[in-house]
Length: 297
Image 1 (cartoon, rainbow, N blue to C red):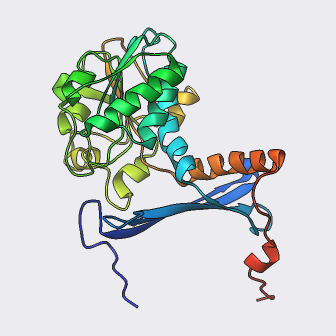
Image 2 (tube, rainbow, N blue to C red):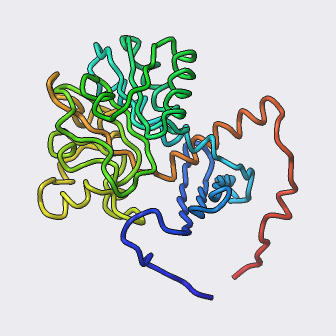
């Protein structure tokens, strides 16, 4: 048995890695474990699962392959950013990335901002951004235009969404953002420092920014050197319940930094589980075979 911890590389992606995100949610009568297994460069590239447990007994109630659910969980907070952080008169959307999470981000941004009139999308592969533009134009009714650079996608955008697999190389120049823009991003390493320093930063989790299994750069790096006080940064939850302000001025750039949190995966999994029971899909397993029976201690 060989254990490597902490990982011997400082930045993602590792050749192989496993992430485990637990959550206990009394309000939904459920607990959960989100497991992400990556094998970068291999056919299939890994997989991810959501395990749901009954809150009272902790007996397993569902095991789900959650690739699509993960897209919703990761992209979903962008909808909250659009509703609570963006200017309500936002008319232009800029998208960087054309994968499954980017798809959800663009969909929820248009849904929460009916004022959006046009959108531009950039990703490095022309065929991907062209297919994305066709699909999102049809789905949202907003015309999406594929463009040849990140700058072209974002320089006039009121709302910007970013979801890439860049990890270690910034995908935009923060000086290209217009005053008053709202930016929602989901992957560590894809922002440059200028974007962070120009913005009012809102995070989904301060703990995850600093202590994710690699820190959420460049935000963590700026905070470590004293350029950003995480204690003063509002969380998205604090904004939603009115404890702290999100956007304070129309000309302010607001940035949502959205690292993954286990309770989000578990909450989405609970909703899917309830819907599966309602419509009668899924295969039923004998939970007794999945539970460990323990005697008294």
